[in-house]
Image 1: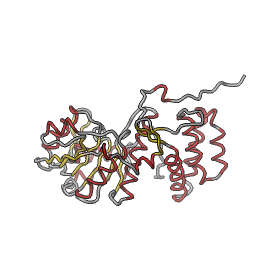
Image 2: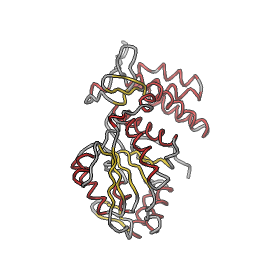
Image 3: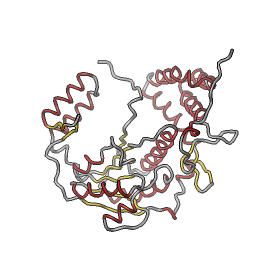
Image 4: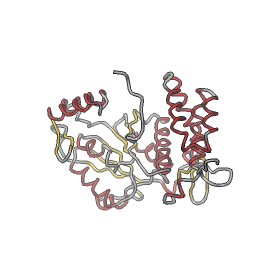
Length: 333
């Protein structure tokens, strides 16, 4: 007998968020994460040749069994050259940008059209929270209930690198920060944190080191009150999007926040207006994570914002935290 296959939409298993960045609508009016994923990977494979792209499309009905092989072949195709790797990535992104949709108040447009037309009625305001603390005298990293710093930290970092748990370049960077007060002085530097409240995000350390941090996260007054208090005690400056004008710390916490998924155009417009007045050379970091198909959508929302800022010359560099479940090519040692 033929083995039955499942082609279900992961949105059926997730809380519905029907506004903002959405998967494409299919021929039957449904949003299928599986069909979209196959289409994106097939488009990405096109620069490597029709054979792989066709194999991916052919595997649609048994995708959940065959995708490990298909994605392995795609990574192998990317490793052929830097030019091909970039071409494959660009082709996949182009498919996403041209098909994903943005929904607001029942109206649906393409994501690029939405980004080009932010709502004036939803325009965001700005609050600046300046700290009065001192720069850190050393880099301290929490570890199993303890705190590692100075030579103890350097020794542990090198041990991680020797074991293979940390990339050599990452180990060298950590040791440089630990050994240099100059590297721990980020005054005059600007960072944008998309998903600023993420546990793995760098917000607290950046503020401690005197950076100007533009923090983007959803409106949760209790959490924003913590961030405002943290900023006041730090050597840095926190810049916050607001739903309405606010002055006191309590008012700022109550009005702070914007949703990356549903207010993507307005956040991009706010950042484009805010960054030119801050120390130049902003590094834009993405630190978001949501379960299932929501993670694809929030990742695209962040990419739309990063692309918009880069096109305007407002993004000097990009940073992100990748899921540990991903696999990467490693250099031969």
